[in-house]
Picture 1 (spheres, one colour):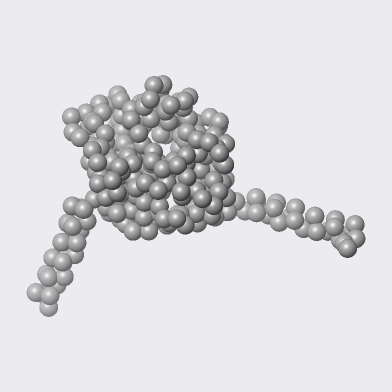
Picture 2 (cartoon, rainbow, N blue to C red):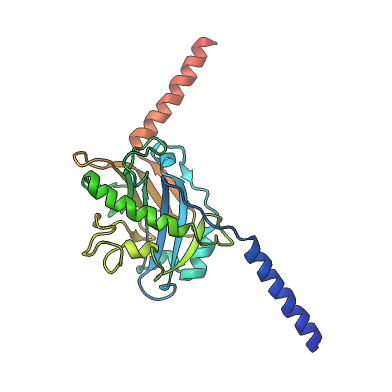
Amino acid sequence: MKTPMVKSLLTLAAACAVGAATANAALVTYSKGDLLMGFQATSGTGSSTVYVVNLGAASNYRDDVNTGTVSIGDIGTDLAAIYGANWNTRNDLFWGIIGTSSNISSETVNGDIGRVLYVSQPQVTTGDAGVGPAGLNATQRGDVANKVVAMGGTFDNYQSTGNSSVAASEGSGDANSWNSYLAPGGVNSGGGVLDYGAFSQIEGTTSQTLSLFRVFSATSSSSFEGQFSLSSNGTLTFVPEPTSAALAGLGTVLLVFRRRRSA
């Protein structure tokens, strides 16, 4: 049986440990050009919490710099803690991805002119990219870009989780939270049934693969950049669009061939 003094010491030690962990926690960051990945449950466990992860520069996926496993820490542990051990099989837990180069038309970021958008779309059949969003004019893209940058600015104010330095938990009712821009019901969605006021559906269930599209003009169809998938333990994988991957492979082969001829 613990004496009152021992109990007090244990309580003090626990409080100090929590305080140290909080003090050491860093704020997550967002920069224009980054992709943000969000999770929300529409009911049940975790429905009051939104989980958002910064995937880094969209250009790294556009240019096939990031392929295979994406290094974002142990988000699987976070997802299980927030949404339950069965998070990956729930049909009321959704995820999506959004990003923009900039909300300023004259600002170029990572090779993208201002108001270029990156947006996910769930695949009905795994491996089939589907038809991406229709082109949007500069005003429409600017409206979406303003929303993305506002959400990113709010994300900047959260502390990272203990399992991922690029992930944070938001309250589902927080201003400019991930889900506030999603229809139906999102106060910043622009009304109606369109996510970010422009897209019919950017989220899928966590068992679905997400296609990533780049929207850059009013007259051109969006371009397919690749696809994201989640394993049951939260490992995120990106597979680039096949043509660009094949060209990258061809470039490697040609480089090797050239070196052999020079030898």
